Length: 603
Image (tube, rainbow, N blue to C red; front, side, top):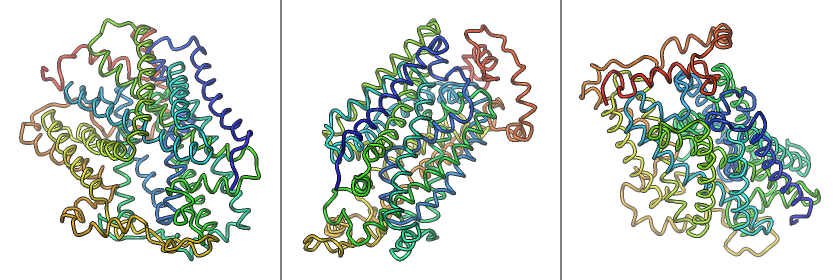
């Protein structure tokens, strides 16, 4: 097994340096960040390609680089069915949520909740998003990379890795705003693809052709693409991935501020939609790379599993183990892979910092301090980025100290995505949904999601529901004793506790994790519809600009005409308040004229 060389450190340091330089560049180019819209929305002037690559980079976190190949290695290539899921997610996001958000010209997606319902639901959505993002995404992406790759494989100091991530992300987010985040992502996605490609190419050479990798995977049961078992308790089947995965990822791509903020920063709705569809190609390419890496892992270690042989302590350490095993003769290449995994972390964290700054300024500061100038709001936005960067470092440090206990708690907070998706779906698709129904639906969905989430943490599903595949240590040249068994080491723990598990543990709490968001969304929508109908929802008159209309769909077939109109359209507001988003200014004026009314009712 090789180790990190000087060239590996040089490659890794170069990635961090270039990311920081991009932030400095966009802090000063074009006069810098003069307004909060310049900082948070890149002046609504972005084109489709960089935004698409940015969306792809944020999707490709350290979890993708490390976890997905390990998932394929342990459970098989049924994960490929996510290719169908990604298509459905992009379709829903581009055709249902994007048209409404874009025509309103909003900065924070939670502004929509006040326009459609009331300010209290806007506050609920904002607080839930801040809790979810500030806790889950920062610590759960920084710490695994810092501990599992840098500390274990390269010998990096844990605290140095945590601080380096937080400082670099905070630096370019604070200086350059959304433009820096997007263009840094463009650079980082190149690093990530290069890291994946180096592993795939070398693995094919080592195994003397891709045919051997495919053949080994076939006979090892890894090409298990199709499983149509309708059981919702089974971890991965065609139905759990397509149905559950669609709800899970739509809650991220469709309504989550971190993703929405980037595609509504595009200079036209056509570019915004195009960015999502180009991003879909990127998602498929990344999925293909991750699957090939997972199959290569199995082909190389099919006779001597490093996890069972105690060469690694966790499955997601297999990729860095493989890299140092097969690329140790190529100085700088292991550093490239570590840089690719780290780039995934930087991208995820930077988008979260920028999104948190946006919702804080737009939802918690701007509505209550209306006298603030755009220049002051720009400085406050930068201050918020700096603040959330510090929170990022603190959460990562806390997670490293508390370990699995905090990680379990944070994963529960991550389940609020389903209820929030249901809340936005109610507003956009149900004209009769009112504030009371939406609030009761949101609370109901949140409570049920927490219930099943906490239960699944206390009583994890048994191996027969997760279906781990066969692993062998027969070819290892070390004495393993009883480690020649291929069963998951956790099986023993579960089997001894089976008698103590309540009935709910093997039914309700064993629901596939992909159905958690689905459950939260459906309960929120169902309860919201029922309560709205019972509280006079049919009597209200909802402005069609807050709903998905037939015109929003038909405009897809006349985009060239609408693009001409957008380019020739001039806003009536002052120049420093203007925007390239065609609907922003006049919608903002309409809201200002009736700021104390929602759907014609006084608040």
